[in-house]
Length: 321
Image (cartoon, rainbow, N blue to C red):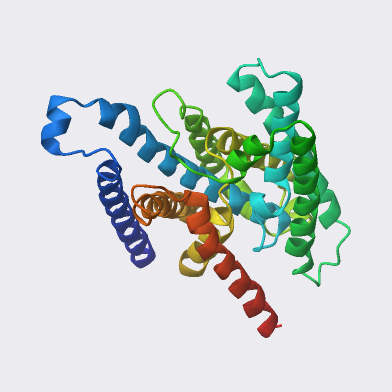
């Protein structure tokens, strides 16, 4: 047991070092010139913009990756995440509804409506998966994409009728250019939800064995299922309200970590959170420099990579079937 534990600790140390290096680099990338001397003279750019943006990227990546692995365990399928199961689209529908009918609501009220809609949307997806044959695992992500496409089309129609297409575009493209102090703090709640998931990691691991096996082992399956879905819905709503949809983070990161560290969620979840945080921050940094002084949304940068990895996983699964 000493060998694996030592190896895991070494991975965590390397992960922490990589996150520190990325965070430090992120603070000095941007249109405004920032140096050590300028920070000492006037730290406003650092405190108001760069530091909040870096923290927002880290919190978003960590929480979305954790939400993805939870959803995969609950559905017992490695090819799903909130952005491919209709959860994100349902949250956007809820956000559209509250924007149209109660635009003066505070941000917490809008977030609560979006989270409730995401919760309903996720339960709808789970209801659909119960009707699919278990021997066809690829049907689950395909049905999720179709289900999300229908909800997305409904959101587009509503936004078009209400002249809110621009709002929809902002919510669908996850980016951090508008993150400043005072406009990202809700993401700490998403980080808290990820921490709550870690406290229940053993229960989620057992739930990943399936409903029948979980009940036979004495797990309160329905309570764990409800906790997991609420966590996924809350994280999705918080991220969309703050920075928009970031696709494929919750799909790619858990699969990569699972291949390296296995399926023990208690051991692998910190690494899932760390890798998700690092990849989102790296994508944001690439987006800032690839068309400098303009920016490419972090969701677009990682969406290209994530889509390729997702297709490779689907085609690779078929080749071994």
